[in-house]
Amino acid sequence: MDIINIYIITAKISGLIIFGYIISKAFNQDLSRKIIKYIINLLWYILIPVFVISSVWGSDIYGISAGYVAGGAVFAVSAGILISFLISKKKGIPFKDIALPVAFMNSGYLGLTLNKLVFNDADMAPAAVYNAVVA
Image 1 (cartoon, rainbow, N blue to C red):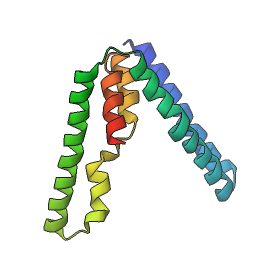
Image 2: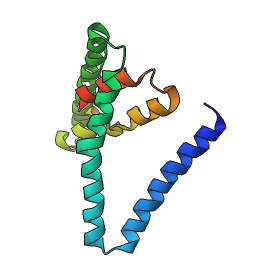
Image 3: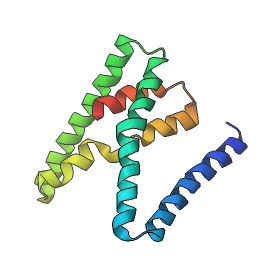
């Protein structure tokens, strides 16, 4: 990846951050929250599933590879639950307060976009399978 592409991607991301900031300042708090909620719903329920499906659809990942990735995702979540339980007992923190962020590691779909940025389409399918299983 050349430096120009990195600058272009950085400019796009910065533009989105600035756009969100302008929305939060240009409108009253209730309206800006509604606009941001609408954008998040659009991303969460439409764009991200389309991105995941299109990444897997045209890939060369097959059953056994997808099974290994899915097994890794199940293992990661199970290990996160165990770690949450141990931290909960040791520190006296309610399990429900730490289980979700530790077990599901709020990386969300950031991994998909970072894979696309760094590896292009080479690793998109395994990342999509992993995120689908965790989600």
